[in-house]
Image (cartoon, rainbow, N blue to C red; front, side, top):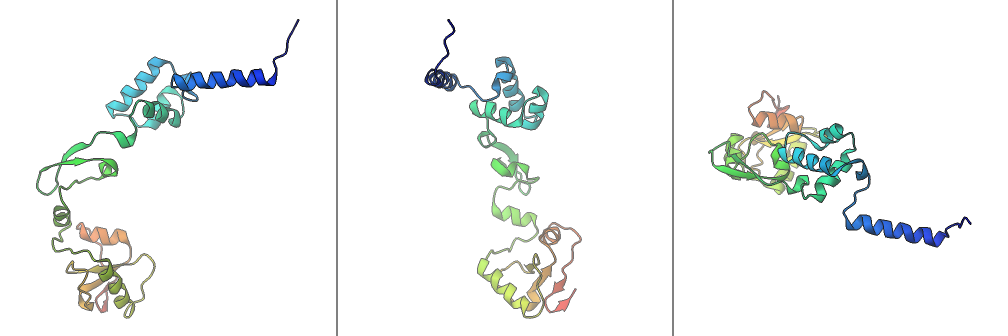
Length: 191
């Protein structure tokens, strides 16, 4: 005689199955991967030669699945060990981690960063920057995205002859890094 399982029996069976999966570290979608493939994924990630997207393409699985496999092994992007690089200014070793890995140059201190930008006298002052924008607005119509630059590097020196305006943040950065960017306004006269 064929007996039909009740809804409660099926639900209980599902609960047991889910509990077992959690216990053994089951990852949704990972049934597509053999244990040896998981090990290969971890090895490729440790080698640093492949991104998670590339690894997913090799094994024909999704990137989130690769991320979960690596996360279970303790190898997320945040947990990568710090790299050791040399300061672009003095050559001292510097430990780099997180988002700084993408930077072309590394620095051991803020002073060396500003030396690299060819502006060792830089003094940051948010209030001075706001005052400078107000002062420039009296003489020049600032557009959204315009950057007010202090020529002597002192944000508290808001004399008109010391203030320049760059069209964009990119042009301002280019100017500091030796590019050919020119300001659109130079302290009292149009550039």
